[in-house]
Length: 300
Image (cartoon, rainbow, N blue to C red; front, side, top):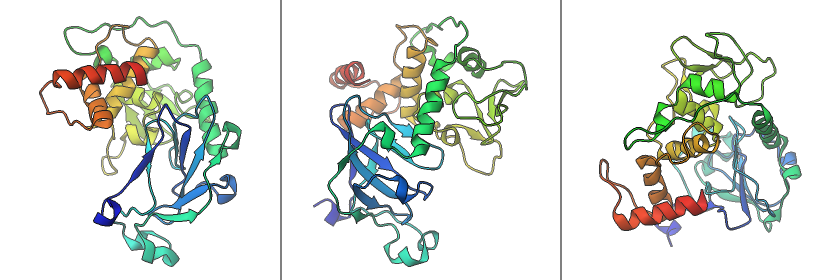
């Protein structure tokens, strides 16, 4: 078996099944908030992965900044029996002998779950997203591609602010575009053309902002830290960020209907769905390209 050979296994829900994976790693979500079901204790030995089924329409992917994620549509969690190297000093003392291991926490059948039964933090994220969708965006003329590249890469941070109903006045503070805001002064657009989140101390260009709005990455993941000593934007080198920001831009009128799908987005689909790794600087083989276009049309 793959596990016996030292490999790991991931479990993902798709658009065609009722599987919903809930990643409650980090210890933010209390056990009392999690509906009893089949659960796996994660490698940090703090959080759990909970496995459910749901009816139609299927629960969406729901990322949070630090409480975990709901992963139901082509996003995976690691299964029991897997192991990832983990520093024992980073896990609770009583669990250090199991550091890095994914183990069965609750040996129960996978339960069915509804939106109302999700932990509050996930529902809050969804309600905030709904409120953003209900915000009336300003008129925006879709950008058209010039040549062979997608107009996605021409979208600026100011374009996003205008389209999403923010305030483009330089350095004026206003409510956040993509997370709830108690103060109403979490965001600003700087004179150098970047969106700033003052809650998480991150900055965003147009592509980074669209990646967060698409739900593919969180504010903390996609943004560039204000301090150069604390990480980087995870949009860099992530072809999935290109795909999901392009899909969001197309759906919400940032780019024209006939805008070509970026090459890196096609490469993401080829690798994720077909196991084909594109060679840098080279087009996809014709047969792979046809299959990718079909997947793009059907699945996305």
